[in-house]
Image: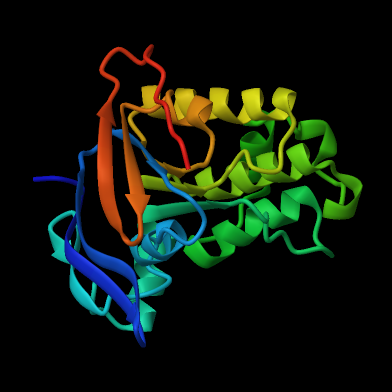
Length: 230
């Protein structure tokens, strides 16, 4: 049984089909890249997988359970217990330190643990910035705080929406190295990206256009380049 499966999923806003009968399977421990131009439906799909939205039609199965029609309360519980979210725009609380921002994820999951949160920051190379506010951190450092926050509760799936979109080359390398470590540890990764170099690190890359998949590239050896043209 696949860890995640989308069955004939559509998301409709009036006359707009943001997703149009999408089907996808993701196995436990797999690393999948989702590519596509702006407006192709990538963020809509990530919101549905991440239990921040529900489909108009179809099923979303997580560990065999249909999560497509659960209540908002159940969505929150699933997101808290099973999914780590990494956003391009960071969404850090501006009056909390890096350490406190990581601990917010613990607060909603169980009990905040400063030692564990500090270890998560050490893992992303930010122990010396733990007591800095977001305004005192660079974009790359803020993104790494987001990664630490997403990983603190050991999620089954990490969803990353354009995680390197705002980063320079050095910080992109740091973030991608963290993703490689997570994959080696068995974490399931789904990464939305415009960058073919980011996509080529995945086992599979799927191209989404106009709300449905148009291409799949398999990269069994993790060495081939996935070419993408808008």
